[in-house]
Image 1 (cartoon, rainbow, N blue to C red):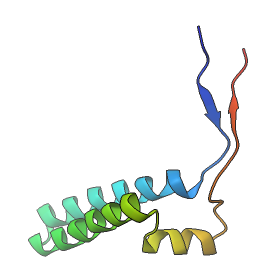
Image 2 (image 1 turned 135 degrees about the vertical axis):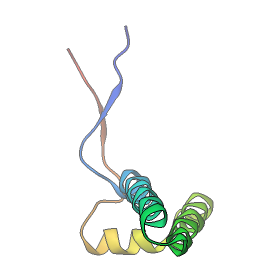
Image 3 (image 1 turned 60 degrees about the vertical axis):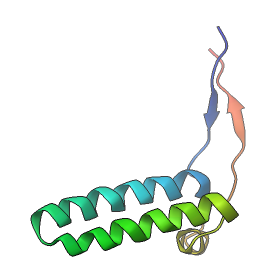
Length: 80
């Protein structure tokens, strides 16, 4: 049975969708509990995800680069 590749650490490519998912969940909860205007944040996150998928860049990537998150990581095969 082939083994799946193992990722070493977080990269920008893995962190951007994670941040987007967190923001979408938080803004949806805030829209349900506080005000529907929080759905504007959900739309902004969706627009940034479209931008990231089209050109490989969004405002979150600038922030993650400044925080020192690597752009790429080596992918190794797990051995058992």
